Image: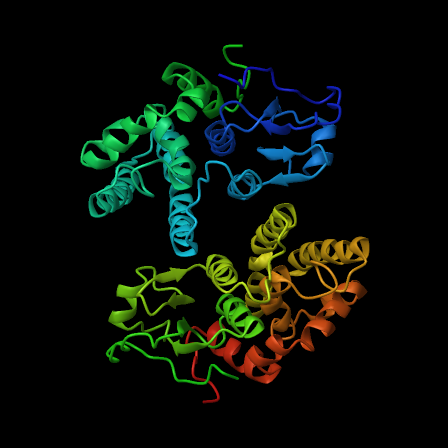
Length: 240
Length: 240
């Protein structure tokens, strides 16, 4: 995995200028939002360097780059700074037109954005269910709601009769949703795919994609990190 | 104001096909999100027909068009349906390339989207302050926070030395933020501009824009509608 550098914390030296022809990515190894952009880098073959940022002990210099202190942040050799994962992904797709990930039709692109908007509103389920379970709460209602949402995604694939959500090859929307499906077992929600065979096949196809393979962590690594995260003391450098 | 048709409610007849060369807009007259898209229509001179939807008593046929039942929704003669205000605005800017509202540079466009993202997270303040005040709560803390956010916008104009947020002419970001500034007096928050002279000048310049004028309601109409909204019985047809 390309994202193998330790996370820089408060007191670390600020990195120098971004090398020519490169884009710098400030990331956190296990962050699913940051993985979206890392998938786009890999899929499009864009030269980039990754600097991992310790999100629980942020370097002073990072807050000057991004006052919100979130990852992922892009920085160009010209000093341009861009953040918010869907915005960075669309920026990269526009600046590097080779292997376009968004469809060229404005309507098809708008459809992917609507789908992303709905998916983004559901992301909270994964965390609420797994942290609720840890705290001994009854999460069966939340699980039923999540299953209902996933069955809508399954239905969408059935209706479209395509291998991926934007057609028979991977497009932007697949990468935008993937990071949470990579973590299903980590959230102990793998069984939620039992009633959604087409969606399950989609996850199997996604695992074969070179960009997915290149950004993926093992279930063991995800689980180990997520345990430290739920315990309130995230070990960003786990396994390094 | 172009949006002068009464709102269709449950039991109303479903509208027929969208006329050729037109885009149909399902809207609510006083909705600030819907106004964003109406501003884009006016600014770009796109032929459209408005159908107002009674949001408190939604027609059955509307929920078939948009399962979320929100406004604004676009419908094309081909039956394509698009919703979520920023998605509809970008779609229109791509399909109708005359008088582009987003800058052509991917970075400048990404900057506008980051700004929109931050602004959108602040929209809740306007409603929390005005409804809190109505309920006799102490809203001085919320007001101080809002003023702080507005002073950031003011600072942005000071640093850029431009008349609008994307340069010396109006671009997409100005229209995306405007509807809440048009309603400042309605929210009884007009005084929040006292310490932000550049932002205040921006609001004065915006009021001169033909698209803003064409979609604007009077302070009296906004106040009358907002009162019925806060009372829990919104009079969408106020003044018709």
